[in-house]
Image 1 (cartoon, rainbow, N blue to C red):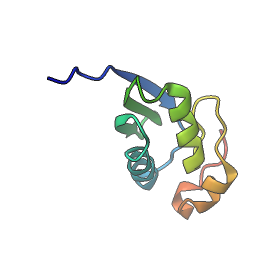
Image 2: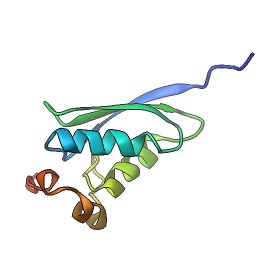
Image 3: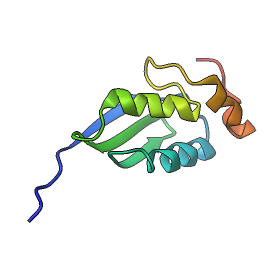
Image 4: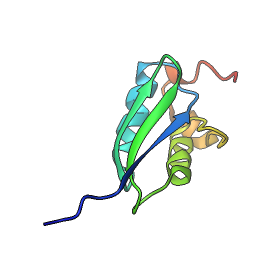
Length: 95
């Protein structure tokens, strides 16, 4: 039988603001290699990601979030990704 993949969890502070942000981040991360699941809490803007430690790491996940257009801990959001976001997700640009 197959050995269980070594999964790990990382919590990332994001600049998400609304339900659309939540959906955008969770949908995009579902295509990211090694990501098992992701869940964004809009209360504290913290994204919890369960990932396969053999395929990815917290840094790669932070960069994936930044590419989508959101700050991820100390990784600043990618301006191109940010411009592609729906307007409701771009409201809060103050940190």
